[in-house]
Image (cartoon, rainbow, N blue to C red):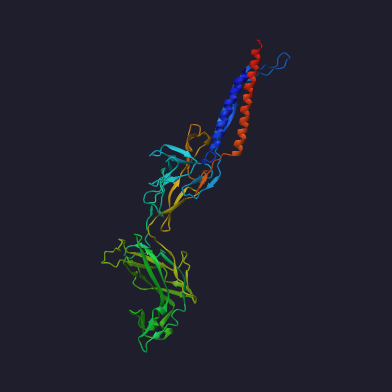
Amino acid sequence: MRSLYAAVSGLKSHQTKMDIIGNNIANVNTIAYKGARVQFKEVFNQTLKGATGAEDGKGGSNAMQVGLGIDVAAVDTMFTVGAIERTDNPTDVMIGGEGFFMVSDDPSFNNKYYTRAGNFTIDDNGNLLASGGFKVLGYRVEEGTVGPDAKLKEAIEGLVISKATVFPAKCTGSIGTEDTDISKDKDVTFEGNINVNTGLNATITGDASPYTISRADITARQTTFTVYDEMGGEHTIKMTIRRKFSSDAGTEPIELKDGNYEITTNDKTKIFDPNKWVVEVESMDGLGGTMKTADGNPVVLAFENGKIVSGDMTNIRIMPSDDGSGYFANGARGFNFNLSFTDQNGNPTITQSANESSVTAASIGGYKQGSLDDFSIGENGDIMGNFTNGKKSILGKIALAKFKNPSGLEKKGSNLYIDTANSGIAIIGTPASNGFGPTVGGALEMSNVDLAREFTNMIQTQRGFQANSRIINTTDQMLEELINLKR
């Protein structure tokens, strides 16, 4: 009764298929779970009569064989990409295509596991961890290079995102009090307008020379901006733009302590140069500092037809006003910086017209030190840190692996895989390049289990199991009839 054993093998094989279906359904909500499928094959056949060829006018005959059941041919892992689940958690990452994250529990990172699950966390040391405490591998930033000169290491290591990471301060301009040629630098740039009517209605007091004119009446604009020393110390600078006195006014006006100027003429047509303005800067911070231009002369802006023609990139020096040690109270050295009134292409950014004065700082080189505020992961695997000083810097880069035959990987539990002889060795790369899928931050890959398909397979498996049970029952009845022949 070969059918009895064939049916038993059918029961066992369908039970295995039901086990796989049950596991798929159980993991329908497991992050990045990859469903499996079962394939059957027939086992060997018993040959009752071999095949014969045509001979002596007779035709040939086919072999007569009786099959002896089925067996499981393969259990395949289906590596189709699951649906995306948005979490907005910065440590959650999804691979939107081919590739696996690499993780390790080895201090030397030689023992590698592979996973599609990107539900990462950060421990107290800043290590980026996968489920189970495995360190996520990638390219770290070289020590001391966080900032505009950040450089990634070539070796693959465990990624670290530490809140202790700092973005170093940058000085506005050139450090040192010696004469320095920084004429090509645009450290502080300005934009806006200077009201050409400023001072035309200024009140001149006094009955005879010398006369007095108020500084406030001839001031077009007064604004403040912040520059930074090498320690990130903030120096608040007050900038005043006022009318330039004309050489026709006689002797250079004397600045009085009460905020007025003493002049030698009351003829308003001779007091001012109509197209020139003086820029005065003054340090207002508590770190201590005196300011002057490199040549000691005031900054003069000259206009023609409402457009600036000279006065750009003026070398301003801010020096400690202490006993001559050359250091501010915070330990920083004096520094030079430029005021610029044109853009990077040399086009004027301030005008002279009858509109209201509105000159303000548009951009300032330099910044204070910043600590890591938060971070995000880009599609190319870059981990970008956002710092409290408003700057960004790369903190690391996630590395991915792919295989010629990913179905050849062996599952090790906890969403982890290891390579095998049939998977091939890992091909290492970075997201969104050379065939690797992009990484999606703040999202997770869901299980690729299709419940409709699994329930359909369950029905088929149940019916197959049921049919094989009927074979056993029928065979048993036949054996019973055989035994009853004796009676």
